[in-house]
Image 1 (cartoon, rainbow, N blue to C red):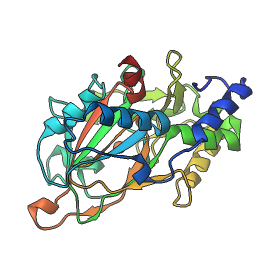
Image 2: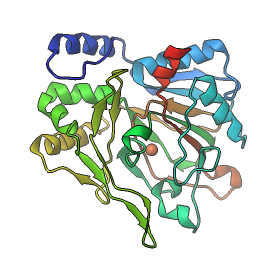
Image 3: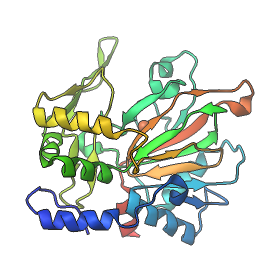
Length: 298
Ligand SMILES: [Fe+2]
């Protein structure tokens, strides 16, 4: 059962909605699969992770609580789930794994993910063009900070339901072809990434998978001045509150992680400890594949 692209077919939408909301998990433990060796999940564990992604577009895995600095754990887990197309953005290493930790000085320290500050609600890769959308991501926690660094998560299909139930015009506003523009990234008069303009909400015509480009950032973004879009954004902002029963909260522990189809998320600020083991380190991989599509091919 897939989501129809247009708003015309209300019956199909209502059926899809009912299926989507039936037995929807109520908290993050219900999204969690235990993996003794996260880099080598067994077939049952792979299926459990995939089933969760089919339902909620995300899954959490809990590994043995030990600090292991090995990027292959994340790379192998993604591959085991069928994710093949690794995105290589400005700040990733050659293997596509970003090491998110507090960067002291250097070019990375200019990017908020590499600080201990909070990150507002967003989906990843808003600056990627339509041919290189970030559809899947994996976060693997190597070390956690003693304080803070939690993630709040919201399934974009749930966001779609909340928006459409409130006012179907919101969907039209978010689907405008130039709803969200991210200006070019220019360093020393050189364009290192061109301006990126596109819809905030799109549905793949082949797979009918929903994709959301969203950022709560106020700077370096331009939202089209259209009342449907502006009201949709105000509604979404209100939906990002602790009373929203569909928002999951997780603090990743060492050896645990999150995989998902580019769900809406934020990150609270954190405070690293003085000991080396208490300095937060997350491996992050972006994929052009969606996890649910990858499943269907297996
Ligand atoms: Fe993110």
